[in-house]
Length: 183
Ligand SMILES: [Zn+2]
Image (tube, rainbow, N blue to C red):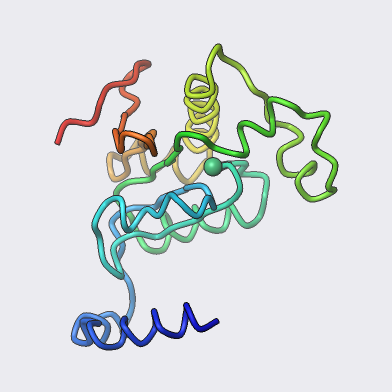
């Protein structure tokens, strides 16, 4: 806990109190991010954004299984109530969830099995499998009624990104191909 207390002390010393005060009345994030719980992939850090900008749902493997109430609620709240203009699936290199799906026979724990059991590993390399995995999540997101409607009205964009931990390269899925995100 000392590590975290020290971190909190440092946060207090440099926190933008005005920004926090301005956010007290409500939030108006521009982007919904569905990312992985992986400790190495922190959306706010990667995109250099502060409090109030991203509405984030992180789970094991950045799954967008919209039949799950936690996933459905996050999407409905972000798109329907907060009016985000972008809904993003953020995948990443070396994803343990995708690796686990490569060896489903090793999925023993009830919770992990229930969560990842329906997913599949496909592709010749881990990166390819992660990207295909991401495409399936994007399809689910795009098929979700509130997302479908918002996209058809032109007030929401859906996106799929891949963040490579080793090189810090970011790829974006456009049409049906992956391109390096231009910066
Ligand atoms: Zn992951």
